[in-house]
Each structure stands twice: as C-alpha cells, then as structure tokens.
Image 1 (spheres, rainbow, N blue to C red):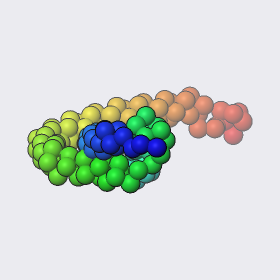
Image 2 (cartoon, rainbow, N blue to C red):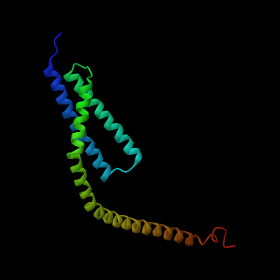
Image 3 (cartoon, rainbow, N blue to C red):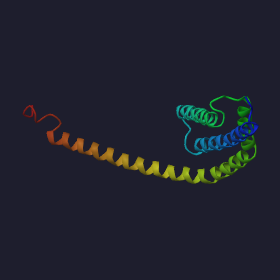
Image 4 (spheres, rainbow, N blue to C red):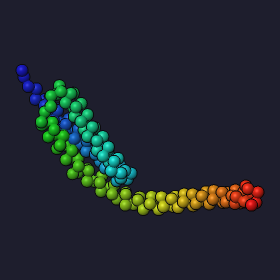
Length: 151
C-alpha cells in the first residue's frame, strides 16, 4: 500500500489553519468575557462550548483529510497554528479590545448608573403611591372603629 505524502501535507496544512481558526474563536470568547460575561457559571458553559467546537472541528478534519484516522502531527500542526495566532494577532486583538474597553467602560458605567438612579426613583414613587393608597383606604375604614359601630 503506497503512502500519499501530499495528503499528509494537506492534513498538516489544514490542521494548522484549523488551529488558527480555533484561536480566532477563542478570541471571540475572550472578548465576550471582557465586555459582557463575568458570571463563573456562564464562563464554565462557554469553556464547554469551546471544547465542543474544538472537538467537532478536529473530527471533521480527520474525517475529511485522513479517512477518520487520527494523526499526531495534525494535533501538533493545530497547536502550532493556535500558538502562532495567539502570540501574534491574538496579542494585537487583546491590546485593541483592552483599549476599547478602557474607553467605553466609563461611558457605559455612567449610563448604567443614571439608568439605575432613574429606575430607583420610579420604584420609590410607585412604592410611595401604593403606601399612600393603603393609608387612605385604612383612613376610610376609620382605623377599625367603624367596623364595630364606633365602640
């Protein structure tokens, strides 16, 4: 049985590109953590989702390029692609997102503080109106004196 080295090279190249794509997906998850998600439970499920994405991508890679046979050099190529992305473009995206976060976060924080203040005032007015209505209803009853004939 002859070995087709072109297919092996194609698998190595595809796994390298797959590793870079997984690095990009990891960056997307990292950006979502930076801006939106800070709950540990959500981050746990996000990590599970990332692992499932990695598993699915390697399953498809091995199925399409090596007839379902797992090759160690494909994993090494994927790790090399991920590391290349992470230490080059990943650093740039992290730096860029941190700068955007430093600029946007104070604005969002001030906006959220104002919104919370307005919501608190609305809640306070509703609560005060409810308490006034309850007091007025109790006053109409005469604080219980009219129920038993004023005695």
